[in-house]
Image (cartoon, rainbow, N blue to C red):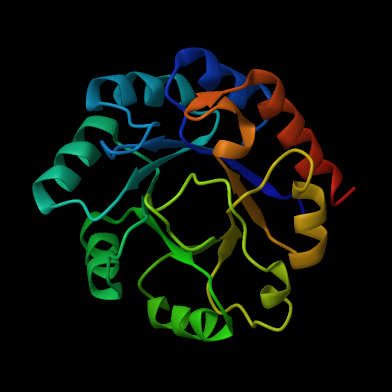
Length: 212
């Protein structure tokens, strides 16, 4: 099985092209102003157009109000919405049902009970994205969690792995967890918020090599 690869926090045409050329299956656009990787709607719409037909575009929102959510979806027309805040199963389920769009929910993993609680999203999302616990910002912090926690967890929902993944550790992460999808943001940057073309290519190559 080929591992799916998401490069998140893309904010320039150059790095979008790099992710697509490297074979990323998903590209993430962050619409959350406190983030260093924030894209205004006009910029995000242009980036989305560049990816059309080559990779799935994931729109990342954090505790967005209804008006913000609606405006972002209308402007960007993403393939996937990724909720990365404290959104409830009721909210993600409603969006999924009303819009008929693929919905992901990111969850910070602290311990095994956290994984058990993730099952409340069954039927409410298409994929869970297991990430490191949030700090000042909900994601993109370059920290990982104990991948060993995944070993005994039975996944009832499609899932992906995030949090501190880099070109140097992603292959090991896939081998340890069996992750069907890996997601990186700060792990392919030369400075906070600045994507590195070489690191994007290296990450994609390393992720593909993990399964031979």
